[in-house]
Length: 183
View 1 (tube, rainbow, N blue to C red):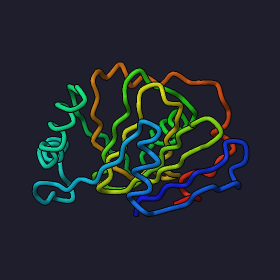
View 2 (tube, rainbow, N blue to C red):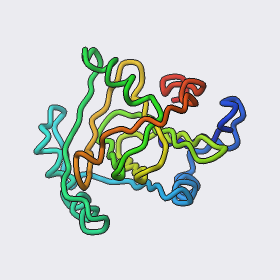
View 3 (tube, rainbow, N blue to C red):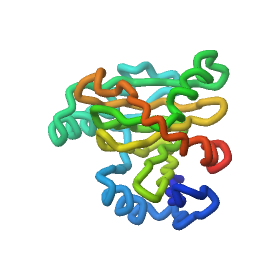
């Protein structure tokens, strides 16, 4: 179930809000320019669905986002346990960074956590299958998919180059619980 935890940015143990109430989560994120939605596939997907099958199953929602936000492309990324590349990828994702484009991710399966750094708060959003999370361009954040990594996501963007991470150099990410501990 989707979860939002608001921490003090100077003390991860200072939890200011911990909720699974979707309307509260939606309002908290909207105040930051972020967004959360729940999607349902237009038809059932097989367990071994290809990227093309996944994109087709969510085509109406993807096309709506493209119209509303000017996005031009979508792809599918899948990380499964025992993926030999995951430890290196995870290390890149868990460092605080910003992008020149929105980071839009829909969880087809699995889960992960975004951490948004907003002034004196760290907003941790645990997304699960069915959740679309969008972090606005320029917002300092990081992502953790867990120790093993187990998720399939649709990514929607304007330009793939906009997803290049620009690291902030802020080490705040080191002091917060990893996704495995918070989930």
